[in-house]
Image 1 (tube, rainbow, N blue to C red):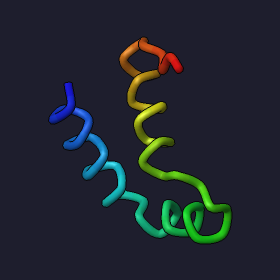
Image 2 (image 1 turned 60 degrees about the vertical axis):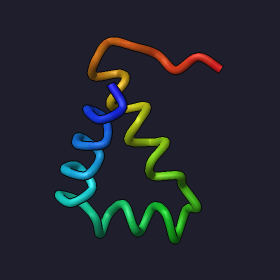
Image 3 (image 1 turned 90 degrees about the vertical axis):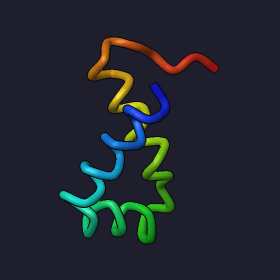
Image 4 (image 1 turned 120 degrees about the horizontal axis):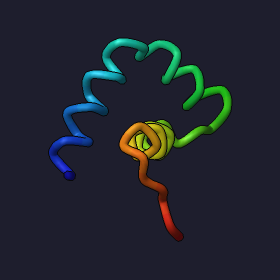
Length: 49
């Protein structure tokens, strides 16, 4: 699962890196966490805290 997310994350970040950098720099958003939550949602799973 970890490797699958890493590959998804690299591909998605590369496609929209300028938008992700803007979110990171201007909104202090944790882009990796955003991608992880989105990836989990696409797989029908949830992040439990």
